[in-house]
Length: 78
Length: 232
Image 1: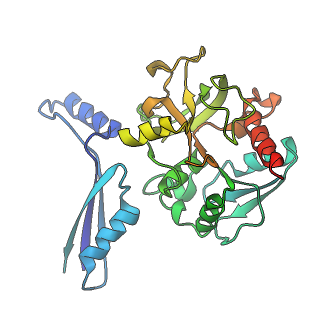
Image 2 (image 1 turned 90 degrees about the horizontal axis):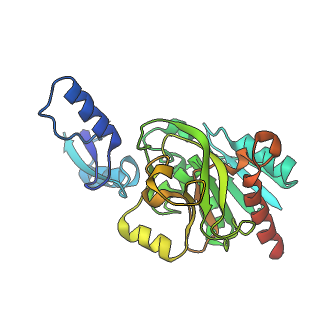
């Protein structure tokens, strides 16, 4: 099985890295870029288990994301 | 006065803390390896600065699961003094022992410099040798010191007198220009509810001897000692 976890900053949390990327994009001529929020992406290989999604959500909450500043989304596929 | 300093893989201020505890303060101090599961009898635990586990994932996110952490949490729950400096502060927030989170500096740069700090409250075990409202100088050295917490948490911290240190101007004024890293409300150090756990980004162990250019940090260690001695 495979899981993908996307970790993103919560709304309202400042993201200076995303802003720096946005300014770099603008300086390359991509003026249409109006906002960038930088996050993390995890590809996880796992043994086939019944409650994989639930367990990966728990893992994300415990370790991959910090719920104070981050949200996460989990996708699981066979 | 018995002091334990936890060494994680990547800690690099553990020996500085040990030096101050032993040679400057004259304490019975020792390093404690992160794989230990028990603490010896102690009055103070220091989580030192550095880059525990390479700061992988998030600063402090892996150290939070170190074998020694449950013992530190138990020690704190019983009222033992815990001081987290820099990476130690980051670990305390990840472990849920202090609220909020230290984020990447607003400038995206590593900052290593002396800063002015306002001691907001002198009635904690860590600040009794300062005057409330006093301005002191202690160096910072970090990439992730930008304190973030939601508005309710900030209000609670302030209402309960738990913001012990703020970045300030030389005259003590709290303003944006004196904020080195973007921390909300210029917060540089906070305590837990019962005031026995302190997390701070500045490094008191780097300014505890005149030969190093400053001695304000020593007063924090003296505060701890007098608090402990009053209770023996």
